[in-house]
Amino acid sequence: MNRLADKIAIVTGAGRIGNIGVAVCDAFLREGARGVVGTDLRSEDAGAIRARMESSHGTGRFLLLEHDVTDEAAWQGVLEQTLAAFGALDVLVNNAGLSIHGGIETTSLADLRAVMAVNHDALFLGIKTCVGALAGAHTRHAGGGAIVNNLSMASYMSNANNIGYHVSKAAGRMLTLCAANELGPRRIRVNSIHPGVTMTPLIREGLRDYVQGGLWPSEEAAEQALAAMSWLKTTSQPEDTAHAFVYLASEEARFVTGASIQHDGGIGGVY
Ligand SMILES: NC(=O)c1ccc[n+]([C@@H]2O[C@H](COP(=O)([O-])OP(=O)(O)OC[C@H]3O[C@@H](n4cnc5c(N)ncnc54)[C@H](O)[C@@H]3O)[C@@H](O)[C@H]2O)c1
Image 1 (cartoon, rainbow, N blue to C red):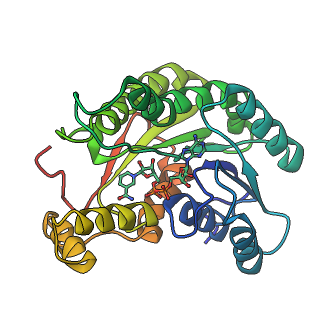
Image 2 (spheres, rainbow, N blue to C red; image 1 turned 90 degrees about the vertical axis):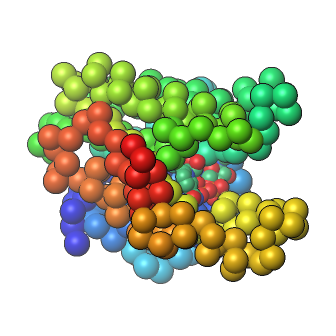
């Protein structure tokens, strides 16, 4: 409790029930964050997510904004609304993500650019927009400002059928390092988390596609096959993955920057 006492955070990709972004917002509020601003392109789950946060954490601590992370002007709007509501910003979580399957010959340039825009360019826009506000965080917290980029083990592993996702997540890792290097003197820490298989609606949809394509006989068999790939022989739940975000956002990680946390049960253990 209270590992994020008095902190104010923006978390992108937090508009879908059962996903990592919602779990991170929930965990931040549980750990005493004063304000959390979730954002997402989609809005169909917004009412239910707001109701859940209010019933668990009381009123006035959570905002959910419609936001396209690839739109620079929209980022400015999110920052302004955050400062208007809570007066400061301490933590930026770049979590929104997009995957469009395909290899070199089967991926259009438009699809490649769409994936790069969400998984890489948007991280750049978010950091660029929020850096001024985050630089003030050290006046309130010894650990200063924190940026946490949700990448993937795809940053490190190749895939013959998902080029845009893997290339964009690898680029996100280098962006994390460059930003950590540049922003360290301003007391802003920049780190990345690399989840393995986390059972969100996105993953379940993917499994359904594989079952329909005949790769596995059922969704249960598909999940078991993915679990078997990890050293711990299991998958993660969004609530477990959220713990890693709490750590990097907290004062406990005040000497940690440029780090890459593999939260993958060992699936990428070859690295
Ligand atoms: N679930 C996993 O196994 C897993 C593994 C590794 C990495 N990740 C990463 O974790 C993050 C969250 O994934 P998730 O599994 O919770 O899936 P998800 O699809 O539920 O979450 C991604 C969210 O990003 C939002 N989004 C997409 N494009 C956007 C845009 N242009 N502007 C604003 N929001 C946009 C989506 O609407 C969605 O709510 C992603 O970056 C994903 O690549 C997930």
